[in-house]
Every structure is written in C-alpha cells, then in structure tokens.
Length: 206
Image (cartoon, rainbow, N blue to C red; front, side, top):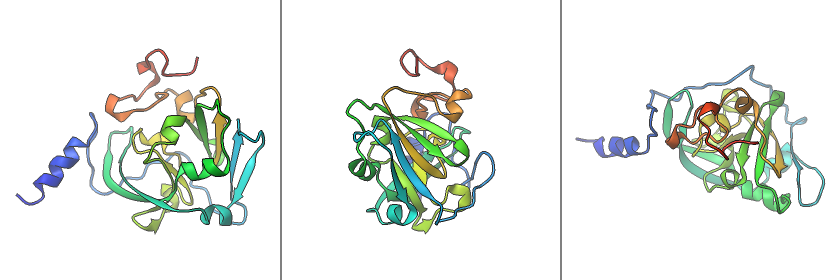
C-alpha cells in the first residue's frame, strides 16, 4: 500500500507515549513578544574563555553561516511532528566566536521575559541542535519563536526555547524556568523523562 513504508518509519521514530497530530500544533507560555530588529541582540555570558560578555546585534547574527537540519520534534504534551526542516545557526559557530571556559559542562538558554532552559553541553553541541530562524525555508512565525528559536530535537520541546536572547555558560548545572516548576532536568523523550520526580541520582543539580 502506498505510503505504508513512510508511516512505518515514522512509527519507529516516535518515542513512547507520543502521537502524530494533524498539522503542526503551536504551544507557548505567555504573550508573544514583538520583534524590534534595532533593539534585538544575543548575549553570550557566564563562564566564557575570555572572562567577559559578548553581544551580537541582529545584523551580526543574521550574517553568520547557516546550516539546515531535518529532525523530528517531540512536545511533552505528547504530540510529535516529524521531518521538520529547520534553518539557522549551529551552536558550534557561536562557540567558535565566543568559546566557553574549559570547565564548562552546561549552558542556560535565555529568552524574552526571563524564560530559560538548561542544557548539558553535550546536548547544546549535538549535531541536530540549532539556533533556528526558519522552518521549511520560511522565517519562523512569531508564535513559533521568531526571530530565533533554540531547536534541540532529541529532547522534549520545552528545551527548544523560543525567542532566544542569551546563552550563559555554566560550570555547574542549574534548573531553568520549567525545570524549577517540576519538569525533568534532562527531558529525554525516549526515556519519558517528563517530570522531576522521575529523576535518578545525578540527573539534576545538587
């Protein structure tokens, strides 16, 4: 039957407890910020190798080399969208410009209104992780995180922070916005790491 092999492949890529909806649902917390290019900047701070903070304006960020990633997307509310084509800037590009100190093991991604999510450095530097500005070769809509959204496809989507404004290098792990409110510190969908009460020793900050 036509289409069955593709459907079977998607089923194999679907983590436990997830389903594939019609279309691409949009979920966000709070109001959608207004993008003002002349005011927008991205700050890199915390435990930097140079010992100071760095800032990119919107024109500077938009001029960085671009890459594309095709990846699935798993929301903790249990829907998954498959085969999304994201375009944007690889974290490695930012780290080459503004290296972390040698003992950095985590990052905090900061967004508008003080929203944040923590990532292990290994998640931040994973091949599919991306500062996304496009979805399917079109600019992100405001509701999906325009102008810049962190995409971390191998973790639950609350780690894929919308409206990114900063990267903080951390020597020690620290919980972000939803992690402080009861979500799992890591958020691996294949292990259904949804809530903090599921955490094993060593999976969260002391």
